[in-house]
Structure formats: structure tokens, C-alpha cells
Image (cartoon, rainbow, N blue to C red):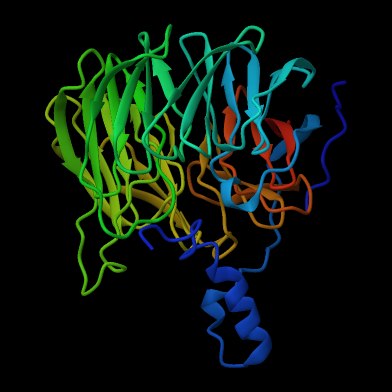
Length: 397
């Protein structure tokens, strides 16, 4: 039932985000053992604020736990008033977006590495043994399965009759959305050392946008896999392979007639979709999802610092340290606010125009590793315990 009670404010591959998420507990241990720890490496304390938003829990539902290795790759997706969500044990569910009521639930009988993608009437997940599994969005019945060359650590995407998946070995697969048969395959050079994870494909106007571990964003024509252009978002630099990692693990985004790409130890770039040339570039390092709305693009870097830019010119709008070192998610940007969640289950709302904190609520005591998902006048939050919460947001009267 709808709950209108407001929430109380308040080594080819490194292991799962080992450089980033694994750093935090080590710093805590170091702080216990020594007084010499740099305070700038510790999670920032939560400061007081003046509330300017009303946030209420619309509904909450237990989806089932996901193993720690895949919490960032298991994320909800929304289409036509339905939420599609899964857990790593193979359960996939469809829920009514307005109420949280279950529409259907199935078990794929596979351990899942990534979920969920939607498109072409399909719900798409990938298994730990490299299968892409397509379910019918209306009732969850299985439409097809297709085994790829290696594990798929980002939810596949579908559109224009084609399902696209990026395998861990760097190969891009295009499958017929009706039959699951392979349409084409594109190979890409993969560095010797990468972070464990990939970016979901973005499908726009008959083109698949792919983020590669080489620091590049590439555009492939959906019909035949032709490489239309490749843009370098991060340039490998440094004395060793660790320093030269420039993975693009954030899904490329398209808005305002521009493609946005973000890399680890590289930067945020706005790319012309006609030529593949960069319109503007800002240095950055992140594996978190890009937030976009209207004229604002926002990111969370690998120290959980927030940055907002003019989406057209790239000029800085503001930056914020309010969730620094709190393992914050990538931002969701809405008309009047920007939201991120952290390792203590807090969801922080900042004013879109200047980055000031205008609300903070706690959905639980578990970390939130899965990206936040925007909904109309709100956001979906899936925490690491498998609790999915829908938050409704409106300005104070």
C-alpha cells in the first residue's frame, strides 16, 4: 500500500571497485591504529541545513539481497509506469511504479551479474556465466538466451529491434531483439589492467554508444556495427598500468544534442554525435553514473565530491564537499534538485542552482551502491540489503 508518512530527515581485472570502495574500510582501520591519518580522507560529518524540500516514502519493498560483488551492477529500470528489478540470485520482478505492488516475478535459475535493461518489450539481465537473458516485459516469460564470450557486467540495452551487450573481454554484441540471434560483433582493444565493471550501452536514434576500458566512447551503427566515430575521454598516463587505467564505466548519455562520456582518471567530455569531436572537457575521475537534466550535467568523483557544469558550454556551476568520502552514488538531476545516496543509507538533496543542501533522508542503515533511478517527481533507491524504496519529492509550500 502507498505509505504517505514522510521519512524522518536527518589481475587482469581488479576486484569490484577495489581501488575505490575498498579504500574506505582500510582508512577506518588506519584511523583506529594511528593518530596520523589525514582527516581529508575520512567521511565528512553531516552538517545542519535548512530544509526546502518535502520528501516522503511512497512505498518500499524487499527485492532480496545481492552479493557484494554485484551491488553496483544490479539496478532498477523504469518503463511505462513499471519498475523492473532483480537480485544476484536470479530473481527478476516487475512492480507497479505508483504502488510498488508486484505485477510478476520469475526465477531465471542463474546467478546474475548485471540487471536490468529494458527496451523492445524486453527486460534484460546477464548471468555470471556470460548469458544474456531476455524476458517478456508484460509477464516475465523467457523469450531467449544467448551465451557471449565472457561475463557481462553491465545491463544490456535494447532499441530499434537490436539488443546490445558489452562483454568483459571488450567485445560488443548486437543481438536480434526478437530471436536473440547475433546480428554483428565488434572487437575493441582491452588494456592489461582494468577496473572490474563496464558501462551499459546507450541506444540513441539507431546508434549504440559504448564506453570502453581504453578510455574511449565509441558510436556503432545498430544495423551493421559500423564504427561511426571514437572519442577519447581519458588518456592513459603514468609510469605503470595502475596509473594508466582510464575505464569508462559510467553509461554514456545523450541530451541537448550532445553525447556525454566520463572516465576514471580522465575526465568528463561533451562529444558531438555527428563527428565524435569533443565540444568541451573537464578533468575528472569517476566510475559513477552521469546526472543530466536540462542545462545541467553533474558527476560524483572518486572522492565523492560533487561537480555541476553547464551542459552546453562545460563551464563550472558549483562543486560540493557535503558527501566527500561517503562512497556516494552518481547524481540524479531534476528540475530543482540533485540527489545522491551514501554508505549509511542517507539520500542527500542539493539545490540544483548552487549545490546547497536542502533535504536529507535515511531510507535505512545499509549502504546504497546501486545507482539512483529518477522517476517523476522523485527517485528510486535500492540499498545493498535489497530494499527498494520510492521517494516522492516536492518543494516546501
